[in-house]
Length: 365
Image 1 (cartoon, rainbow, N blue to C red):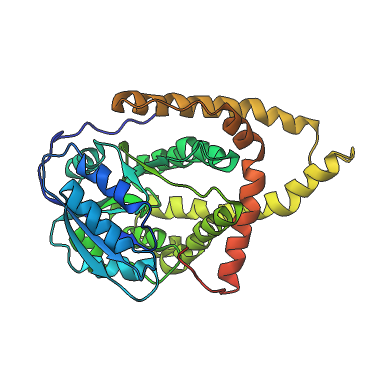
Image 2: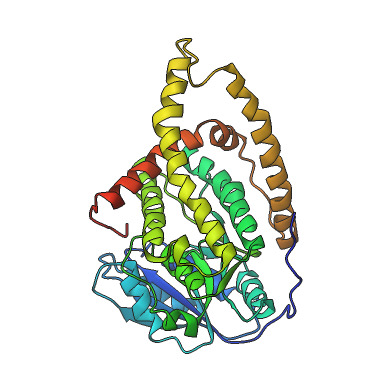
């Protein structure tokens, strides 16, 4: 129910750099640049694209698109695998006060850059980053993407709203966020970890800075539509949280609210493991009439869950209405999200934790 302060400047005109790290995105990069070209922003926008050793002609596709849409674009090449390496290569060339990271498959709403810049210019000096509001662009593909649409639309967005209230959004996600250039350079850029955006954000907190969330800066990203890709992505996210604990855990934080929020994240692995190894087996044996763990009273959580999602929906609808967007009809996805999403997600998260504990090989994609 918290509301952020109004923008002090609703039409900023400062120059902005958009940094895109791309690997094998030849079929998507043109659309991303197209949406950058349609931004309703008064300032100068320059784009830096770093090709991380692609093999599908990504850089050629980007050059053709930049020329077609009239975008001022700088093209770089980083042969060393790893998104952090590509981002750090691009960071060295940025000379604007602020820059935005954007995934190569992410499309910006026409007011996205204007609104995220307005937020950082309206924030206190110790706010060094603003996380954008990332939603799903390909939810019509199959039931997996339909469920993820609700996860982004209500679950992830609501968490960021809550964390933003404490001025401690825990992930300024690489898919779409704005940063103060000198601060990112000062703390050494992105580390060689699987969750480079999580670790970077927690290092901001460690250095005494704050991170906001801007719900009216909206972008649409492509989510996995195949289970194996979904497993890789969500296990990376879970593993990235463990990396954050190592690099900038709660005991290393000076600000109380940062310690508080990161400490809450320590509970998440225990919840996922309990869900995976206790609740799911309890659900299975409940079908055989053995209510040792899960019983009929468990169904009473569903009305509460539906009530909470309705509240979230109302807040998100206000954002969509303000931006001239319409919410897609996705009733089947909502039903599967309520009933089955956590059953799928928690075991994948546990696998991500085990990957980090066992120090298994890290891969960007």
